[in-house]
Length: 81
Ligand SMILES: [Zn+2]
Image 1 (cartoon, helix red, strand yellow):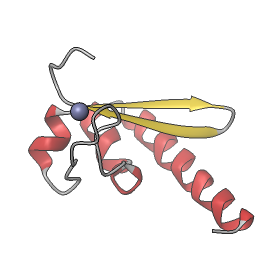
Image 2: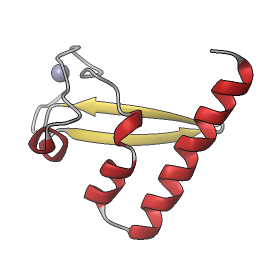
Image 3: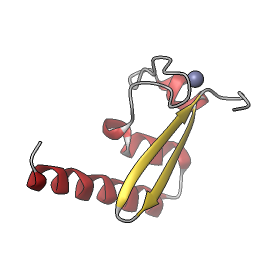
Image 4: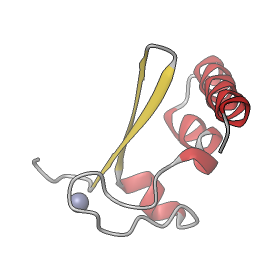
């Protein structure tokens, strides 16, 4: 991935987040960010199925924005980590 492509991807993520914030709904936010979610749990690397709606709803998905970079934190629901 070259620099230009990476920049475009970051812009696309920001756009999705901005859009989802307007809607104000957590589920819609997750759906908007769907394509950018990681494939595994950030803590234990368990597989995370983006196409599984229940999984998306029950797992803890956090979005962190810093320095124009977007990081996704995906963890199992109800799990203390
Ligand atoms: Zn995990």
